Length: 490
Image 1 (cartoon, one colour):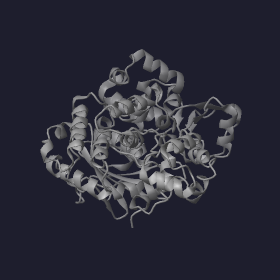
Image 2: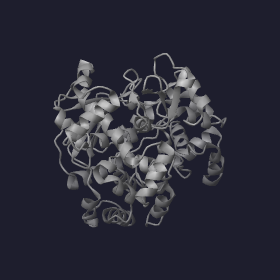
Image 3: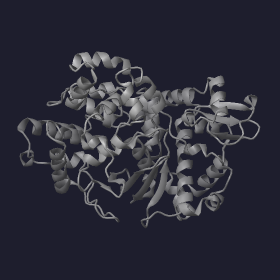
Image 4: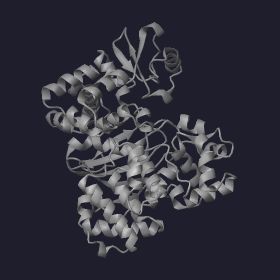
């Protein structure tokens, strides 16, 4: 979008927050860059240039605006709706792969050469993978500086910088302030969480956001010991690259309150990225709902409760296992099966607030489970053991970098995997916004009530007009039912 100058100028003049994260405005007369909704008086059009990423602005020598803090904008929805090289690379960078494995590791995961990845990112985003990762490190550093009392040296290494000097230089260059000045300017109320050692953050999103089905689904399917709903917040444990953590996510009108407790602060960037993916916070609800409203039978559902998101996951392998456990059984039965596995094979963790006891078992741990101990039909035991063995040996990859169509085909090749299981994994684990469940009983019932075709083939043909947002149409159709997944817990 940043190449459409006229459209960008209109967005800046109207201070339209819907475009935050889509592009960034650099002001040549002041040397700063802003989000489109920056509250200051818009500059003259001839003094504005537009860039596709914060990293591109920083590469061009601009520093972040102190008023609108463009580095805290919601992420671009492009990386969640696309499955091409650039989108997959951006999802991996957000997951901290460049910091942990370098650009060669990023390229290896994508199956391309380092040169190809760098060339593609430069062409589309105006910055290479190192610059994009550097911008992310700067944002993480700012977050830690402003929300914790940690020493600056600890923050530098937790944010992924190789030295304190690099940390200091980057912060000054990006924010035109030293780390100490950033801390001095931070609101005093943001310096501590309610729990010792917890980080209290605000996760932004594009309005509107309907929390009912989003948090309702997570709470209704919560696995005891791993997840819970408590005092208006969804809480769960997190398995992370350097350790583990717990998170509490609370819906608010203009943000999601996030309280993180981590065993290793180097996991902060990854934890935030996974929480945002879990709640689908980088979605563009205006574009999604506008497309779905073109169907006259679907439009009333959208108008009644706009801004529905797809409840996703923080661990793709975990969700795939839980999808198999939930085949042809009730939500309560699926939770019971999962809870037994967690108690027997999950890693125990300490929760400062109590209630959470374990991490969900890893694929390697589940691969060691004796199939005869699983209280499920023999065919489903075969499905379960085949899935976890493929996940454990790496022959099946469900990471953020995977190709959606190719992975879905691999899932369908496994015994016991039909279209429903493959598609629900594609929708909630892989993040495919166009995944569709025409054979789902709840979808067929809702379709019949609305006057939509109720047979899978006819409904799929009708849903072609909803593309590429059929996963969101699923949320609106599910919401016609009285199941607890559709309601924010009291």
